[in-house]
Length: 294
Image 1 (cartoon, helix red, strand yellow):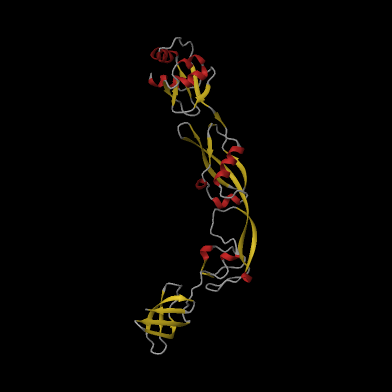
Image 2: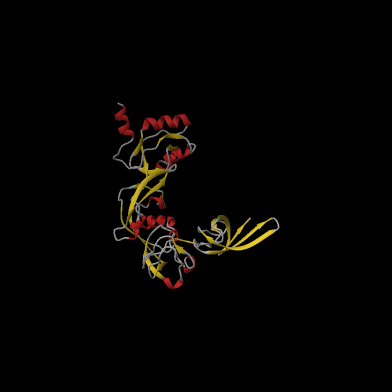
């Protein structure tokens, strides 16, 4: 009996169904959209729970009669009322607009190659950037699957998807010759290259200023895009370098030369050897080729 009752309440019908459901609960406001007489009831009068998207909720005459009596209505229900969610297949234009909101490139070209054709509740379409599967594939001919959802009702989500190709034009700094690890990068060793594709990586160098005067921490082959993670600022002190050492203790101030045993940048401690007696000591880097001991 219970199963039969549910089949009646949440089922397809042979008479018109009104696509007015917009939340978890059906109220007199929804019934009034199907039969204006229910507008005489308080709009928030609870009538029942909503069906799921794609299903229908049939309000039987006996249910409606109990509702109107409890509310003191001055009319008698004469017919059942069928209610359902407004459903439609998501269209490409609003899907592309939702994708554009998530992509951090305003000039990106978005092509939807394929998308799900199932009906979905009417609502706000959302495509989160972190749901773009295999983002680097989005610039390839086959594209990438982007999972999204429709926000509907009381903050519910209905999953949708699309296969997309995304194209962005940009410039990157490229090595014009192979750069060795540790060598100082000069402008003559670089070139700008205009490219088209898509990637969510944000660590590639876009200008010479981000690269010139730095050193690679790995070898960078000719024609390769230079990533910021592949380079670092040069060290002010390099191992094997002759250093100017300034030492002060109280009122005593000394200047001498020392040999760098380790490399370091400004503010870091390096190991220095006194070439006169062979002893080593730690000194702090102050400037290129200059360290201090206190």
